[in-house]
Every structure is written in structure tokens, then in C-alpha cells.
Length: 374
Image (cartoon, rainbow, N blue to C red; front, side, top):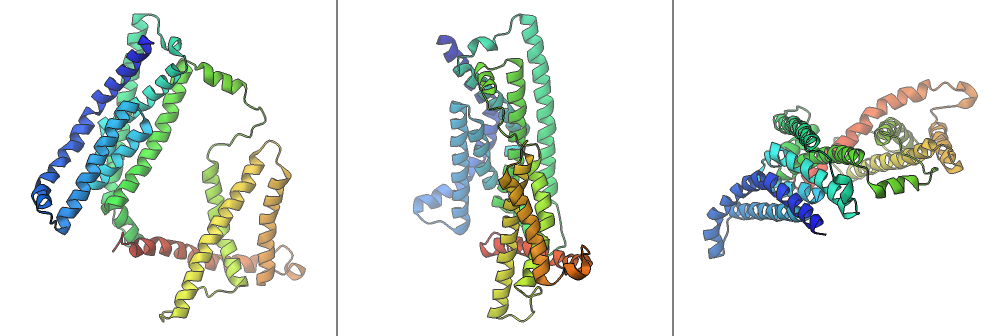
């Protein structure tokens, strides 16, 4: 029991030491509160002072989350604690700096060790021989420090390069401005990068630690798992997305042909034209989501060792839907053309561009409607 307390205490001391530079970095921005305190005492704030007060509140919130992550040695809590301060200060180095990434890797590794220790695995973490221990720790420290330097430098360079991106497209320009210059957009970019780093670091740290010192509980769970449980192959989400993006424009074009909806919006602004535009938007999003769900379910069933009847039915349904839409739209006459789809190919090639223009227009106008872009 005493050894367990020492290990828990030592883990928190190590996290506090590594996180000290991050805490000092964030606390340096609390000086913004000095300019706000006189106006706050008078009870009247200008717009700039109110915005500064919000930023200081976000910074204090980040500090509280950081302290909580030290107490609980929680990597998710630590990752979330970096985002409010990044949004408040527009300083991406808070989340992508060397000390921040090093702290994330350390907390992830300690979390795995402590979870194993709490499960009665204290004996499994003992290393026999001082020379072996020192050599192992030295090699581990070199690997962690070098990988941390590479990751933090890459993330910082990516964010800074992204801020300097200039696009000429009227569709992409508001989105790029939002992601590079807006506090919420910057927090979104940093959150995405941290999610990638977190996922990779979590898998690596858990795999290495459990490989070097296997966990009894995990071994028992692996031995008692159902051997017929389907295993999801890697990169299935990327594969499903690519297939969805290839199929959804065709389904959209065929549905527009069957309904029918005008493909090109008129330059004349009227309630009717706005209604047609909203209908095209809704249809494009519905087709994209429906195709994603259908493709994901169908291919997941096919990934199984023994595809079920339901999976086969979903795949056949998707194929039959395409043929049915071709037939209803008049783009294919099996009695005359057989399996010749030249007319359908020509029509779809003209509509695919319009389909993606509609999707990008949604990305352009939604930030404007909610005030996130000019």
C-alpha cells in the first residue's frame, strides 16, 4: 500500500515538473487582467475590455484544467486544457510547443503505468539490475525527447504556414480566414492536430509499455474474447469516405433529374429562387449523409469473415438504386443501349462539378450566417 502511494505521488511530481513551463507560459498572459481591473471595479467595460475579460476567463479556465490534469494524471483533461488558452491568446505554441507535447507523452505513459499498477500489476514494473534500468531509461529519454522535438516543430510550422496561406477562391477564402485568423478557428485547427498526436501517442505508449511489461488483465481479456468477433480493418473510414465522395455526386445528379430541380440558380433574387437553392443544399447534404451511411454499413458487412445476408442486401440495394435512378431519369434504356452508359456518363460529368460547388457554398455561407466570417 505504501509503495502504491509513493508511485502515485512520484507520477504527479513528474507531471508537475514537466508542466511547469507550460503553466508559466499561460500565466504570463494573465497580465491582461491588470488593464481591465479599474474598469471592472467601476462596473463599466468597453467592448475591447469585455473581450479581454473573456480572454482572461478562458486563460484561468485553462490553468484550472491543467492543475486538475496534474492531480488526476488524465491525458484527455490535459489536452482539453490547452484549447481555451490557445483561443484566448491566438498563441499556438501553447498547445504545440516542446514542453506541451512532452507533457502529453509523459502523461499518456504514466496513465498506462498507473492503470496497470492499480490493477495489482505492481510486480510487473520492477526492473532487475541498475545498469539495465539506467540504459533503458537513457534510451527511452532520447527517443521521447527527439520525437517530441520533431512533432512540436512540425506542428508549429504547420500552424504558422497555415496562417500565411492566401487563396483566390471566393468559396475557400472565408473558410481559410476563419481557420487561420479567428480564435475559434485556430482552436479548431489546434484541436485537430492535438487529436492526431494524442491518438498516435496513446497507441504507441500503450503498445510499448504493455509489450515490455504485459498486463495480466489485458492478457485475460484477450484470451477470453470471442474468436468470431469481427475486426475492423485499418483505414476503413478513409476508404468509405473515398467511395462515398465518388458515388454521392452520381446519386445527386440522378435525383435532380428525376425530381426535377433546376441545377443552375438564376441571377434574379426571388423567394422562389431562394427556395430552389435551399432545396439543392438540403438534397446535397442528405445524399452525402445517406450514401455515407449506406456505404459504411454495406462495406462493414463485407469486411466480416462471413458476410451476413443483411450486408449483401445493402450492397445490392445500393447497386439497384443507381440502376433504378438511371432508368427513371431516362439516361439509360436497357432495351436499346444494353450496358452502354455513355449518355449517363456525359450527364454526370457535367453535374459533379455543380454538386461540389453546392457543398462548398454551404461551407462558405454557414460561417457568415453565424458571424464567424465576414
